[in-house]
Image (cartoon, rainbow, N blue to C red):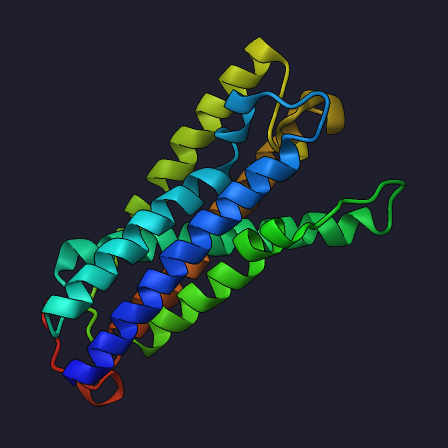
Length: 217
């Protein structure tokens, strides 16, 4: 068991390092745009969730090296972060697919591929195969929506002031009225809830399937 946990710890450290490389690479990529503003880089939900993911991976690695199971706070943190980076990847993939049928093309550099696709996929595999996580309560689904909701309100207010939005569906100029923005936001919140529900359900599998005894009600 200790060998397996050590393996998870090493993997999470590598994942954290990969996150640092991806964020640095993406920063260097957007630095090449003439209209780029540094503070806009940190306004992307993908960047913010990616930074949080690095902290979560590093913390989870440290715990895996020292303990056979994860404390509840870490499981909460990991579920939130895994949900956020997964939804970011799904939303970005949807935008890329939609762009192929319109009159513009979205570049997907290696750093963006890591942030939106590879890291979320590996994080999901880490979550699904980890036998050291605790049984999480369903009330976490409510808490999952807190950060995206605050981010959305802040981004809309900030965007109306500076005239820049990180995603097209938040920009009044690129949508057909406020209702379309509301619909997009509701769909995003439903997606956050759905992904979090799946992750929560996997943490509540019977002990035999999880390979451990449940640690919380």
